[in-house]
Image (cartoon, rainbow, N blue to C red; front, side, top):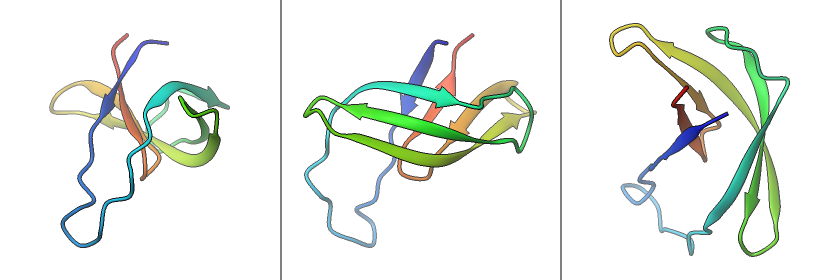
Amino acid sequence: MKYEIITKSWSKRRMLDKEKSILNIDFLDFQKQHNHFCKMLVHYKDGSDEMLISRVIFNDIKSHWSIDGMKVAVRLLD
């Protein structure tokens, strides 16, 4: 599955942590269905992993799919 990472700015109301570079993202239990919840496994370059509960979203206006895990969000390209 091809995707691009959507950059989020958390600096408006809180201090930024040292941002980790994302190496790869795996999606568990993914279905291309609006408002479906799945698990997003984020692999960082420093060797750490993080499991996020994410929501699959379809944008009717732009006709594209995205997966939002709050901390990390991606836009599907295929």
